[in-house]
Amino acid sequence: MNYSEDYYSLNKMLTNKPVNKEEIGIGTAHSKIILMGEHAVVYDHPAIALPFPAANTKVTITPSDSHESYIQSRYFNGKLAEVPTELDNLKEAIKVTSTSLNLKAKPLNILIESTIPSGRGMGSSAAVTVALVRSLCDFYDCELPDYLLQFIVNQAEVIAHESTSGLDTLITSSMQAVIYKKSQQPHPFSFGLDAYLVVADSNQEGHTKQAVGKVRQLKESQPDFINSVLEAIGTFVYQAMDAIRNKNIQELGRLMTYNHYYLNQLEVSNSRLDQIVNAAWLAGALGAKLTGGGMGGCVIALAQTAQEAQAVEDAMKAAGAIQTWQLDLKSI
Ligand code: PMV
Image 1 (cartoon, rainbow, N blue to C red):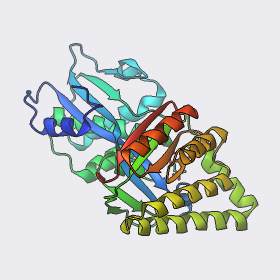
Image 2 (image 1 turned 45 degrees about the horizontal axis):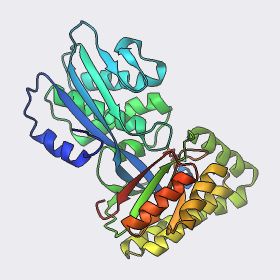
Image 3 (image 1 turned 60 degrees about the vertical axis):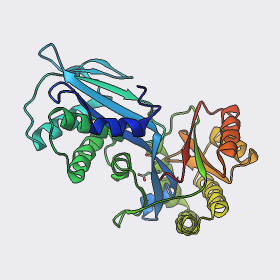
Image 4 (image 1 turned 30 degrees about the horizontal axis):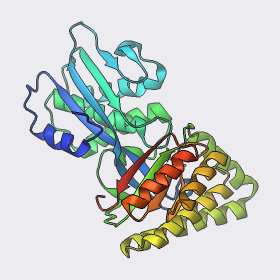
């Protein structure tokens, strides 16, 4: 079975897994998308984020024939003890899981399969870590409460990204969208909208850390202007929540486009992202914007029907997107 084609069926199948628990452990997780509010969220304005199951990760664990553990992944094939520093988060996740759950260490073969591109603001590293911790728990047949999963993954994410808001961990490990503010608990909600979200990979790595630094510098040099931009983005997010509640997808699309314009004022977009946003818009999208840190990464667009979503996807590809995905917003 191709796990990337049918993520839901795989999850269902795993619950009735007919194999010996001693021999195999399987864990899955999906990517995340920030719908609106990135950057402003750093300054305690709200943001909306949602799970994106079309791009996902599966980790399979089997016993190793040798006395050492091995990892097989897109970026590295070899001994776990010799992983490059970029994958230290995986070692940390295994260590914290083993300690927290009192697991008896065994040499393992760890196979990581992922359709989530890295460096695109889709939560690739958190998703891989969530799937890894779940596969370990499946292998050792132990219970994994959500709070413990999130604690372990956040520990590993600190290694990968120095600091973390916990948003990637939260969204990649659950099927609920949230409205999120740093100083408050996230509020889960359902979209249930007759609309499609199209996600397009710009084929450029995003630079979240630099983009956050740039906004900080701008805020220091032009505090009044930047504070008013951040404030406006926060207001768009609250208005977007009203639009979602009222099933007003035209208004939601408009707000997404305004949000992109204001992200441009923060100088975190670039010409390629703008071209893809414009192409989506000209192809009939209700709205389009960059998602995540920016300076590369992904663009998202809202379309009313599956057919319109396809036209938007085609236009985004013609404007330079290397890969696109669709999400039916009724399912989230
Ligand atoms: O690029 P991502 O998906 O990690 O999103 C970054 C979102 C920011 O608001 C720019 C930073 C943050 O920590 O919230």
